[in-house]
Amino acid sequence: MPTSIPADSVGLVQPQQFHFDQPLELACGRQLDSYSLTVETYGTLNADRSNAILICHALSGNHHLAGYHSMDDRKPGWWDSAIGPGKIIDTKRFFVVGLNNLGGCHGSSGPNQLNPETGVPYGPDFPIVTVPDWVESQARLADHLGIQQWAAVIGGSLGGMQALQWAIDYPQRLRHCIIIAAAARLSAQNIAFNEVARQAITRDPQFHDGHYYAEQAIPKTGLMLARMVGHITYLSDDGMREKFGRDMKSGKLSFDLSPQFEIESYLQYQGERFSTAFDANTYLLMTRALDYFDPAASFGDSLSEAVRGAQCKFKVISFTTDWRFSPERSREIVDALIDAGKAVSYAEIDSPQGHDAFLIPIPRYMEVFGACMGQVVADIPCAVQESR
Image (cartoon, rainbow, N blue to C red; front, side, top):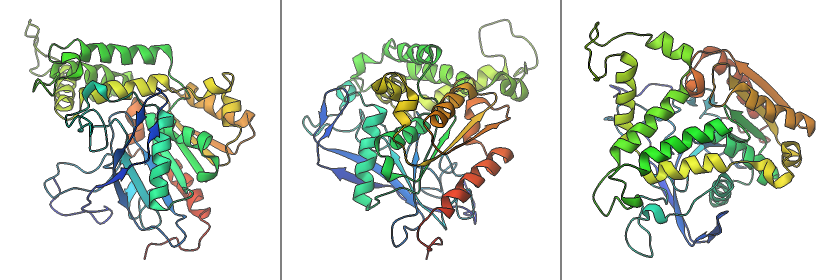
């Protein structure tokens, strides 16, 4: 927890909740008659509302991007290293919007929230949502905030998929699209990892077919295993070797099945922490959204045709040791954009941190990201680029 708020922090922040009564038709064929989105904003919206940035979150992310909710917080928001006054996403220049997606478990309508028709949590009855569904709800949020065009839509991993979908679905509503450590669709291997995670959750005796709220239970073991599997894929072999190697907790073998290597203890710690902070039904929904994402499928399986109508400038960033969303997947996006005649720049950052690198302030990454944001600033049509 901070003893004082750093000068480059957005400081103490409070989330807001926006309710929408306009029914939302979902790709699965179901409809949400009403729903709520939990949102945080930082900085000041300028006079012509042209300096707004949308940050889309990854699988386990949420609306809390930066700053602190109280002085008792152990750490700031998940992208605090990039967002704040004088930082890469400079809140003296930009009005930054982050939200918890539909189906999330941090305040937006989702499995752990009350179903207004029944008065009990949705649980497994919350409908399957997709990346296009999220983008539609985000567009309605923009309407509510009076933002007709985003200066940029930015996201890493699953967030990068949302940024790409924005450029396809609402080409006139963003000037820049920044896609970090993402892919245009999952590989079979990635879908397989997601299925292992889902099986770990649904086979937990405490899952109760998703109705664990009514049973006052938590499928903690399943969530823990799902997170451990996922976390392995977010790290690289080089990164794990550099951080843990074959270091042992006690310095010697105990010849039993208890955790003996530092990497074992680390994974168990991450899994244990996640199992009490995240919702199992939400994890199932989010991994399905990842699996289903495939914008090319509606365009004859051609990603070039899918992005042909886009009007924004694109920046695509990948990391050399990311094997969950490898540089090859980013280059597929870049190649499609070039084939469609779009303005795109690409950077491949050398880093040992694997997929998690998109959350880490690696110097070269920050240099490249900063150059991208400099172009975003230059394209703000209004001269008002400093908050008042």
